[in-house]
Every structure is written in C-alpha cells, then in structure tokens.
Length: 392
Image (cartoon, rainbow, N blue to C red; front, side, top):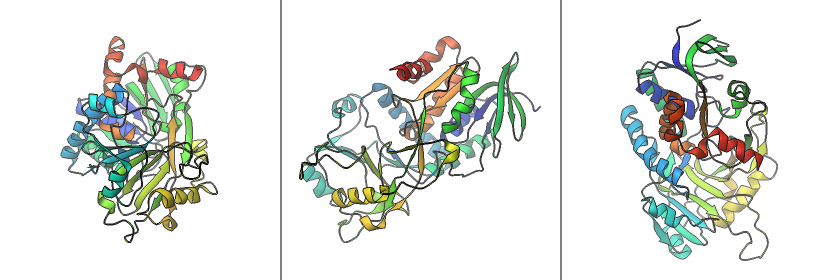
C-alpha cells in the first residue's frame, strides 16, 4: 500500500481535475484515479466547446458565475492556454422565467433587442420573442484544453493522475479511506467521488444509502453544421455568438405544435462548425453500454431546425456527435460530504462553465468541518436537496 494521501479523487473529468488542482494549490497531497485512458471520449468532459453564459434566475448560480469568470482568467494565466472565448451569447424566445431583471440585479451586462434588430446584427440567425444579448460574460469554453490546463497545473503542484486505474472497491476504516484499484491500493484521509455517470458504483455504499442516487444518465446527439458563406452575410465561425432558443410551443406560422423537443442551444467549435443541440433530448442508458450513435431521424430533426432558424448554416452538412448528461431531478448540482466521503456531480448539462469555481468549492467541502459545509456550498447543492427532489 502506498503512502497515505490527503485526498484521492475518483474521476479525471473536468470536475475531478479542477478539484485536484485546487486541493494541490492549497498544499494537499492528492492523486486522481481515472478508469480510462488520457483524452478518452467515454464520458462528459471531452470536445472542443462548451457554452458559457450567466443566463440564470437563481442567485446561487449567478454568484457562482461571477466567481467562475475570475477563476477562468486565473487558470488561463497560470497555464498559458486560451480557454475562454468571450464572443457573447444571444438568448431569445419565450422562456419560463424572465432572465433580464435577475441578471441585471446580479450585475450582468445585458442588451435587449427586438427580433428584427437582432437579425439585422446577426443575419445568419433568426429570432423570436425577447432577445437578450449577454455581451461581456458569455461565449464558449474549450473543454479539451481545459482538461489539459487543470492537469498541467496539478502536476506542477505535485499532484498526479493515474490513468487506466479502475476503482474496484473503497471502504472507510479507523484511519481513513482505503481504495482498491486495478493499479494498486491507495490510502487517504478523504475521497472525492467525481465519476460522473459512474458515481453510483461507489456512492451508495460509501454514503450509507440503501439505494442509488437519483441521477439519470442521458446520451444526447447534437450536430455540427458548416457555415454557408452565401447566406451567412459575413458571420464567421470564430465570432459566431453562442445562443439559446426557448421556442414557442406553437409554430407562429402554421399554428402546429412545435417540432423541437427541448430548449435549443448552439455555439461554435473551432474547425468543426456550429454545434446545434436540443437540451437534455436523448436516451437514458448505462454509461458502459453507449452506442455512440444518434437515433434514426435525430440528425434530420437538427437539420430541419437549422433550415428554419439558422439561415447562415448549410443544413445538408450536419455531422452528429455523442455526449452524455448526468442529470438530477431538479437539474441542480450535487456537491456534499458525509464523513470522509465527498460526492461531486455538478451536472445536468450546465456545469462545465463553472468548473474552476466548482473545483474550489468541492475542495473546500472536502476540507471543511462538518458544521461549516453549508457555508462553502449552497444548500441547493446538498445531498438532502437531491433526496428531497427525488421524493417529489
């Protein structure tokens, strides 16, 4: 058995690496165990782009977003890597909440446009309803480079990621946590479960629960489309704004119920085109049984949306891709600790944008006294909140 560590982190996705970076930055000895190879595409953190925005009504998320922006700049400065592209975000349509006032109250700079004014500015897109332009605190993040940056800084601080190290068992004893893996046995004072879709392999037993955590694993299949220079009217990939569309439930032209199955999101991925997807639209699955293929008709559905709402893209150029969500019933994050065990699943398809700040939060949860946990993370992220949401 190796020397006792301060913390073992299970999972080298964005959550695990951000947490390990902040723990090591605080002088803790930390090792990350990852069941797959470096750079794998079997979980949720891979790819060239993630949306970055402060389009929230909940103060917990708006405050966290402010802190995250400063910390993105911190990790960019330390790593020398450009991770955040602040190209702005345009949200439009008929959302269930009016985002404008909560965002203004939180200090988010906003511009409100009519659909006609928005289309004049971005002729490769069409708009409806209220249009909000978040021009200073939004854009996109390079997911792949973010993992590189976190691991690079972790290594500088003496931390280590062990790849192809599948955890087969973990138990608590009088001296701490013992973790058995395919690369050996490790001992630590605390363990952080940041395993995404595989969290329920270890979490129920370590947390003393009699059933798995209520988290659904969804495979979604957004698609990239190429810009059509004849219709984009000068809009280019590197400056195309990220966007969200809370579409009307009924088509304003035909009167028919809308075909689009969820809130639409889009953003550029460097060298791949513009990603277009329907939020949380996919199929539930076991993460070890993914097909990595979209369902029949899904790519055409995305192309049909592009044809109607994104005239600057060529709907015939769609290339689908496979991603996974780990989703809680309320879509809130799960960050909490019981004894020596931290469970960290900042999930539901909207966690990546917060990652540097979430890594700090999770590290603080791991190191705080039991009485201080509620002061370092919002109660809405607690295990109690998840269990309550599961019973509704």
